[in-house]
Length: 394
Image (cartoon, rainbow, N blue to C red; front, top):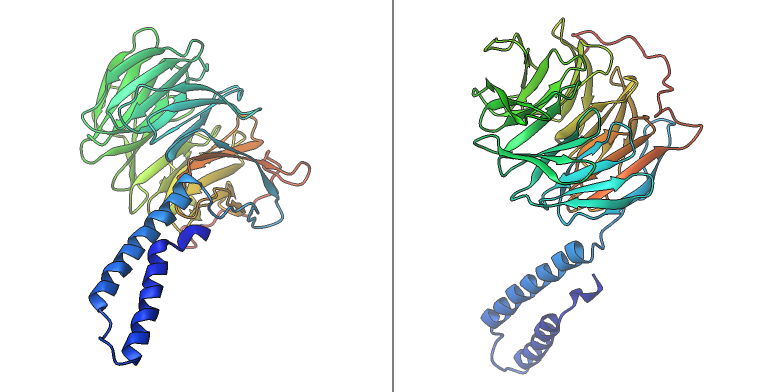
């Protein structure tokens, strides 16, 4: 930055010039210890100035040009700033009229996506908020946090309806049952808890999952199966309404943490997963086979199906948002989070109408994307896909 040159630097340069002149005239040699002390001081001051420049003034390189693979243009329509730390998660209300974001600044922000106005700021957390999800009817907003508590907000009054210490360790996973009668939470304590929703708001059942942390959870759209992703990269399939104490199927899908899960909106046998191993996969759970493979250059933090089930979107620590066909063919790679210091993308969500993407990340911003009208197929106009690859090809 322009202010990098400091008084300390000028003093060092002046001292060197003076001592070299004296040395040439036969004077005493340069005191290198004096020079070393001031060089360390200069480095320290430079580091302070640099980090002040980056994090306080936010004067960092901006990727205003969207990087696109193929001929599908996307544009960044808004960059919203209201959080003071990394933004961890984003979710649309089912009608699309509101969206919520949350993260490491220990609060939830509710937005009007049509205007970009932050309408509510929900506080009262003692640690980072790791996941949020609206109930299917849009009347409740559930959140889970690293403070081990589950909170549910009334989305009409924005009063906290329910607060309970739900686990013995940090909570990461959250998913509502499609009929809104219950929701599930997954934790680093190795358990998945099923909660009754309004009006009871109480623990209904605990699935003992203590082989490893339950990092991600997702109800199938029919509500009959609950997928749970663990720290080791496997995905277990449970029947939450049965009395079974074990999963009925285990998919060994990834080499590292299964960070995110998403069921296809209409096909009960297709499950997408994202992992810290840098891949996202689509599984045929009935056959136990991979049908699509998507790769990033860093952790894949989240994966989500489009509302019509024809496309997928992923977010990654490599700073990109990936848009893919259902068969894993890349459509676009979007880079819109400006900080090269903390430009990772931690979550991404489709709007319910499928026309807008919203990504959040380490730069503290919320970025909204739209396709260029008449030229893209983000809304579901996808060319006929090639045959899915077989196991050998994958």
